[in-house]
Image (cartoon, rainbow over all chains, first blue to last red):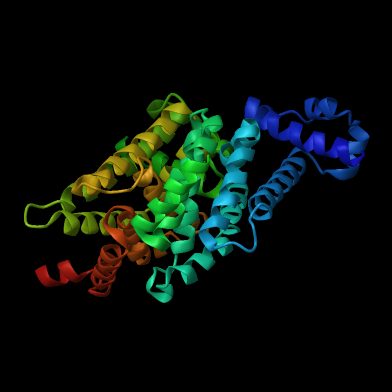
Length: 201
Length: 211
């Protein structure tokens, strides 16, 4: 299979998972949607699980790249968090089925799959580590403040995707930004950033 | 009869932590509880019903922790701190049930159990939102949801890694996360220090005094 077919196959597999659940997700249907033969599939994947895990890994790489790539490397930390978050929310809103696969369907398969989701969240922590320096409080802040900030954004994104309102997420950028920044900057300065994001969205 | 039902509920929780709800079966749960699938069906019609009973067990125990921490002789913040501490100790002692409540109901379970996750989340959010009542607070409407979510991500990470026993040590982090949006950094850091002092006083402090 060529790169485009592979991409289509991985995506179709995640869509199967969201639509019919893990037990009924069909490799055959995903293969047909991507125009991939059984032999081509078997040459690359050991089976349904192998393909699903590859699809999820590919998706999470893209999510991390989206959030970090759009981050202007030269601006002040809060502005960079804002552009990364904005890119992420737009991507989630544009692909609601993939967002469901990302946050709920795949991590629900079994503990090993859930661990992938935990790992994904931890990959955002380095972006937050700069916030600790930016805060001026450094070591005074609790040891897990980076994950607390990532988890704050995740809770809102998960809740909206789960309620079928992923399309609303880009509008929620200002308040999500507040919750990511507040552990580092406190409510007053985080609210300034929230208001400035609201003016430009 | 009650013992068998409890054994099945325990086995259900253990199976969820070992292989997840999606791959849990009636046969597996029955066998690890030391009984047969027909014994299972004397207590529960479906797997989901047994899972709901397990979720309700930990929810009820959690509510009991919160209720006993709120005493008339404690201030609001002291009570909240004691409640959170008691909940973390509960989750540390019942990691399989905690994992069921925090991970499986959220990610994998059918709608009735998922609904319970949403209720639990909504109750905690409403409790936290009371801190807003000082007036003039700039935190947006979703701030309490986000603060609870931050703490939950930490709890889920530990449970998923099989480190549920470590949960109580994160009390200061969770207190900071809950307080900072509404009370500011200075007050949240003060509460986190208070939480640390409470931990250093030792888990058996109260029972040691009473014995």
